[in-house]
Length: 265
Image 1: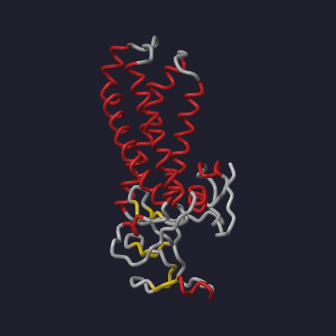
Image 2 (image 1 turned 180 degrees about the vertical axis):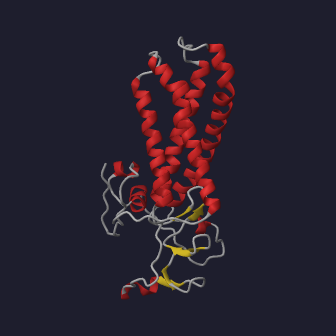
Image 3 (image 1 turned 180 degrees about the horizontal axis):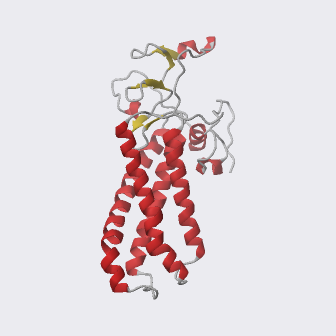
């Protein structure tokens, strides 16, 4: 499956994405400049910490850009419906187009999305069948980067030795507010919010239930099915190779249902 770009024209969504991107820029350039690189240059921390921080930052922004621009599973105007699967399709009462069951019409995007989970303003895109794995990666890498930032803020004031190349009193006067309060506050908010969202998304994937289905208590349809966690995640990520579940720069291949299922490392 080739990469398909998808852009939603929504000024409010653009504002939300810009805010997330601004937080990423803050933590990617401000924290290393004041804490990570100075302490590395003076030998207080090993090079592996610096490399890991930039890897986490790169994967985080890659997941954000891919989740924001990937096609979530938009249905074509004239879909091809196999005869054997017609009973699994239904008519959308908003756009009057045929769609598979478990699809949903997004009023913000203006079209139906296969197995839509929800519309997320923070990525200005729907979370559906084809980009759910990218949204899950974004939640995970945001947790990692936020926790990394909190650890650096804590070590700066309670563990790292004072920098000999800087005036400590002048450094504290200029950067204490931005470093200790703003950075730590953003790290706590992002880590707490993403942890809760990641847990919610993961439990939904493992129970084979979307957020929209959870919010429809009067629905007569029961979609949740019992699957192993390997199969559930492999179907969402589009590959049985577990290492590829963590890579955002790739395409997703739908996995056909079968009797035998085996995952690979």
